[in-house]
Image: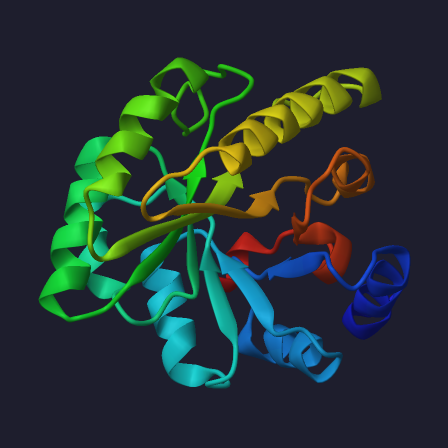
Length: 221
């Protein structure tokens, strides 16, 4: 199937209250345009350099999501360009986002990335350190937390469901509490191979790359 057909198929499978992010890393502007013409408005990028190049060349009404690990020295390049940062995972990064966004009079909307599978090869804060990061977020004036995100370890359906359900419990627990600058609007979890499971466990934002664009084409970078 082509990109447009893939998008339409996925949209028919999910409800209107689920945000579908087309993960466009390594993809050409032409491929993004095909997705755009099929109705895609939320695009996800991993690398700051690739993201900033695409922003300059693409439609101004697109909502860009930075879903990859964000280095502190790259924050200055994304101010005012990103709709949602999915990968806040430590206090030093928070401080840099706060500093750079405050200097430009901008607000950074972020998700806290949780390493729910405790995978040493994945980014994300560990669950036991979450409250400390949230407390630091409460002191910010230019950072607003809009929810949480995870990338789970590869596994079978039972394993996926376990991690997604745990994320939903954390999300619901945080939603019950009264924080400054912290609101649970988005639970970002689930990708091409497991988004249906993620949605069944409570995700309201999914990140799909290969399921829309096909196999990754790193030669396009």
